[in-house]
Length: 346
Ligand SMILES: NC(=O)c1ccc[n+]([C@@H]2O[C@H](COP(=O)([O-])OP(=O)(O)OC[C@H]3O[C@@H](n4cnc5c(N)ncnc54)[C@H](OP(=O)(O)O)[C@@H]3O)[C@@H](O)[C@H]2O)c1
Picture 1 (cartoon, protein in one colour):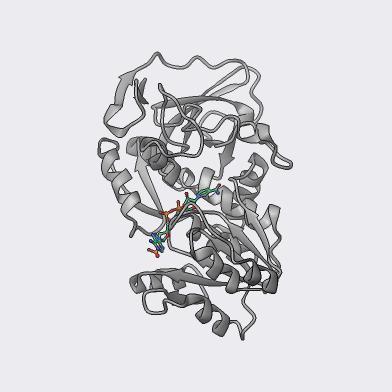
Picture 2 (cartoon, protein in one colour):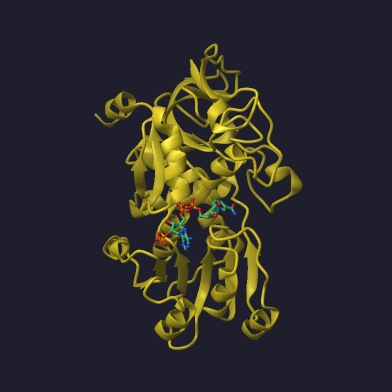
């Protein structure tokens, strides 16, 4: 089988396509023929050597991917041949509260990821996906969408009628929008680019604030909520923006600090935080149970995740650059097997 691997150094220039022997599944393993993989900022941070966890070569990159089950071990009960399946990003976190063990193995670094023709995993370390999703749809889910689900529905709770503030139009933000909509909440979306407004509204955003036109967007959120602020905020920006997010959140509300798009450190204005008495939750992905609950909800509501720009696998460095530059809408996906997908949809 083919596999991409950082050989002796973790840097995009040293990513090589190579041949490995085909996997031989153990009695509880499944072999997934990867149909699509997708990018996360962690992949860029790892490739550029500034991720927050030590990662060493050799390493197969990428955390997000999905495909069809093409082989199963003799004792497998959770999957059948032909199922659409996605390996879970944190294979040691099946359910329950986060523990140091939860992040011990992480696909795409420090543990080998999914950028390969086949991925062999224990059946407990993958999730089955409904047939109305494509491999590209499914590849958007394991990191960002599960993080959004876990933050909003497991660490926090959403109540129908809540107002949820969501920043940006990337993978995590649009997943958060879909999760919030499925819970019957109202949503306020921030984007720098007004061209995204019609698509955000089509996805169910109630209010769209264009931050280039309204740089004091916390004020705009307060105005839109009768001076109260959002009940729940999903902060993907980090850096100095976190204080604005706190200002835009109601007294007693909750801020999910999820991302670091504008900065990896933030100085919290404690007076603002105390005035708002907000709960700040720092998100760290989610467990398999969250992934499964998300998939059930998508199935029940027949919601498809938002696949954004797509790049061929031989344009991986362009895909990384596109992600780093921003401007995309939804998840950046790298389809691996068009034929496989086409066949599965017949
Ligand atoms: N804690 C966790 O476990 C976890 C898990 C997954 C991801 N994350 C983090 O969450 C963040 C979002 O991830 P993602 O995959 O959704 O990223 P993404 O697809 O690149 O989306 C980021 C969005 O942020 C907005 N944006 C980009 N640059 C900006 C800037 N300079 N100022 C203001 N807005 C900007 C853009 O929306 P507009 O163009 O519409 O403004 C963009 O679509 C990242 O920091 C990622 O590392 C954390």
